[in-house]
Image (cartoon, rainbow, N blue to C red; front, side, top):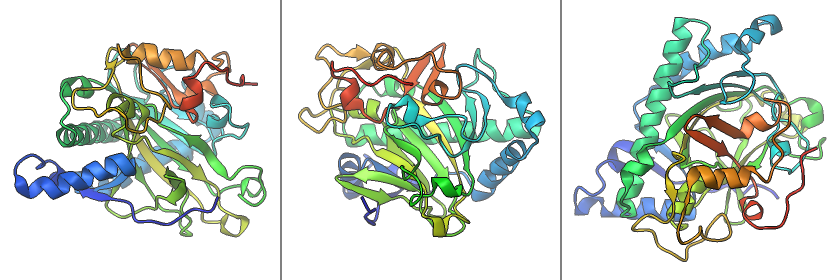
Length: 360
């Protein structure tokens, strides 16, 4: 299916913060409500992190990505929760989601909230850059959630803000020839998936040759999500979709490979903050939710609700978890003393009784 270009909604975060302050904000509130229900993804401006800060963050991270294999071994952490370095093609979203065998064509570095499980930092400069970026992007995620709560008249906002955050920096090199879209049996650099989060916040760099690799499924169309200077991309997750009874659309998205003629110069980087529900959060429609809207799960949650941890565990139980870590399972699962997250491509299948294909 060829991508369909369309303009995605864009919002100034400082203006969004004024929602509810007066009648003049009603048109902005209506516009955000439409984006939540119809798009599931948007651009954000005026969010308080400069491009210079992001570039410094990328600079210190590239030092590890460009290090020798022997040096990189120091920053590889096996098992869960996700921390440290994942080598190029070391993970496969497709295998975890039973949608294919292709690997993710990127390197990754992971950083979580401060807690019982330490993060991995080669030096104080690296640590300071990652802590600052993680904390600032977490604050942005919470600000956006507060805006959504105002627009949809949601209560129990404190429950939404008592979540966990995971930051991952992904570097996609130029696509190797055999994985170009016209040479491979898949067009994907990373398989199609929902984020099993409340929301995700992404800062991306453009491919030098102008190719747009990130796409979101809006309606029946794959829509390119290009780099726009001075913006973040926010996409909304399946958990937020569930607790708002579908009033917030969860954006299914993917990262695609270019054709052979655009292989050179197809490299890109992205920094993603996954903001995830506390496992004790009861997943039932929050007060103010509107029943009858489209659910990405295919059906509503049980009337009595279900705790996020149990809900995610039910999804996880349908997949094998005995694969070598982190090559397969660790990528889409984030586990910590207070959270367990699985990002799924086919949530409707996972929530029905019919069995899913096993991982091989």
